[in-house]
Image 1 (cartoon, rainbow, N blue to C red):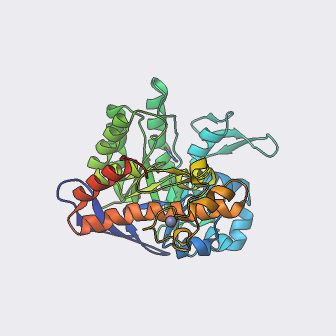
Image 2 (image 1 turned 90 degrees about the vertical axis):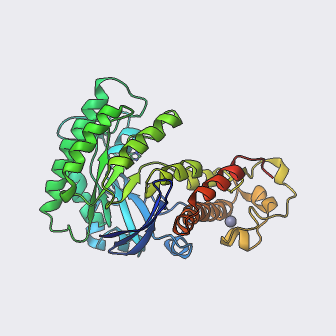
Length: 376
Ligand code: GUN
Ligand code: ZN
């Protein structure tokens, strides 16, 4: 990876970076849409690329279950398998195991779960997670981490943090011996829950391994904790993580959270929120979310957002027709998904432009003023 800080905001920790990976350049800060099953729900890869999106996320857990590494190896990796020629990041599977399977048991060896196909006990170790991510061939791969809900308290939080550090070492070893270090970039994931002391211990250990990893993620957040605690942990981590490496906050997708994270020095984020909320009929706008299922849109000939350059708004699709079809015709969900991904890209692209032009604080002020003001 080539990583370069291009510009910094003078009053916040926000920055613009250029990240060059094997499948091209991605400018940061950026929001990464989630393509869990090797597809952004509702969109073709060509559509996603045409929106200017250069980095998306796949999930190791899902792709390992189906189609499986045999198919991915035969295809020559997930880029070819899904027809996506730009950058790709894979999450390691740890978080999905915990969030999706009630029967996951974490041991020192790895995560033991019941296969959703045949109920057989199946183990995902750090070594296997990395090896599966090698078959997938993503440009950025994530360590397997021991994830606990951000609402968990007690000794389990510390245990998970220390185990995540030990698992990072096993991931590093598996990655080093693979000969793929020049093509695929391993990121460490800082854990430690909402406890600043545990976060500091995790940061100490993971920063010590700086020469063995390319970038850092902040994990274990966005699980329903109070915002002020979330921001404090993000700030603590972003302040200490090396400034010459990308910083990725996992599972962050609300525009207001993205911008606070950017102001605190975060470069990347991902979340299913914009695509999922689209399928539920909600369009994201600079004046706040717009629920198109509401009856008040029945006769509105306005587009979602007159100033939006997305194909949905530019083509003149009315709020009325979106209201009419949104939950009954799949085209409605596609149209809203396109709009919402362009919205996320405008929020982040607007932040990049503002940082470059030395007016990021004004950008923040006007965003928050519009977003939480009266909706039209
Ligand atoms: N996605 C959201 N949060 C996390 C996390 O803490 N770890 C991983 N691996 N994925 C996540
Ligand atoms: Zn639009």
